[in-house]
Length: 493
Image 1 (spheres, helix red, strand yellow):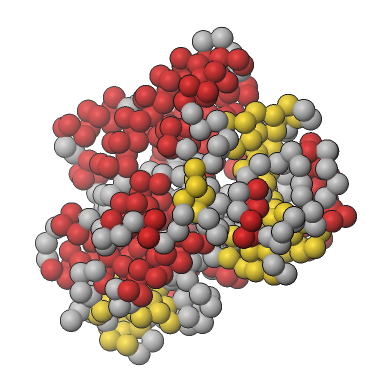
Image 2 (tube, helix red, strand yellow; image 1 turned 135 degrees about the vertical axis):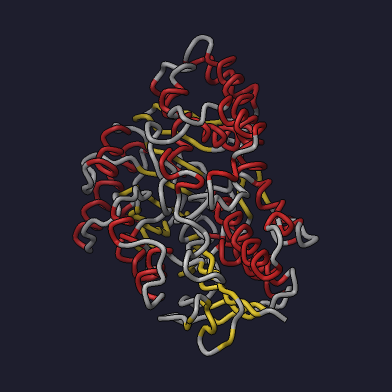
């Protein structure tokens, strides 16, 4: 039996481990944390259960497709609730917009803001569905080792028709003028780690997921997804080794031979790509040097506060976006002039509005997130300064007194991303999906010098986010299986 090791038990590592074990590979997973899930994990305190990372459950078909490979469904593991409204946007005091789950109501909302915008929304969503079908079904499951993977005439024609070289910023302004509608349509791009100006219009597929598919929530918390994937892996015979830090892997003559003293025939690294190459690989076997990484555009980091609040907080729903300040200024302070922002946008998740299990009865669970440029100084004084700024605006915009009712408070920022995940410059989401960092222009999944080493996760293809991470793990596993059996990777997807 072939033996493989997976380094890291985040979403991509779990997807890789399950895919390998399903093909009768003996799999060992190593992780420096105490449990599986990576960023998709949970911590509990005083009756509150906080999801530490992902909170938006989009592209549900990707998760369902994954579990179906193994004869399961997401419903075997957790209840998925369709949120309606999907989210609320605060543009100012008493100026909010709720996004309904129903298309006809979405059209009515857009029409009430800008004449003709209702039908324009329907046009955008029809176009974004085509992009979604091509992008998710034909593009993202490719390993993107070479541009030639895209050299089929039908696929090239589709890509040209989809306008892959245009920016989303230019694309969406052909349809809408009102700044509030533009903000609503551009906001899903934030999940790709870039701005509308730097992101190809192909990624309007995110609008299809946001508006047409809708926003979901796994009851019990987003970590139910990683728990389900961990349970599936265990069912398939995967061996997990937690509290295990991998400092090096043994390799010679272009092959990795063992991990932690265990002989292996192949390895998949799902941990931070930069960290693995800089600190775990030895003898000049890395794909990329420091200059390469320094030129890359990273997605933002984040300042996060996990707050347990005594009593209820009115005027919030499950997902809340605070766009009462300039998006362009905040983006400038993330990407072009990195600094702690002057007037930041922020996001508040209040899952206790949907799920009573995540907070004591009559209390509220808040997750407050501010995007932040990676690589900045991070200390307790700065965290507290911005806690004060964010909470003041939150209280003003909701008309609620919150800070005097805090029962649990925990912060998480750049230094924590580095410490827990060895995250390059403390980024939260990986490598941004700009035009020059898409598909075959992202870091390769295969190591050029070690034949049985492959990478997955948010610094390689297809990109940031939970669904892409699930896809990334499956594609990396298919690559390793292709190496084992000397056949096509497509056979294993």
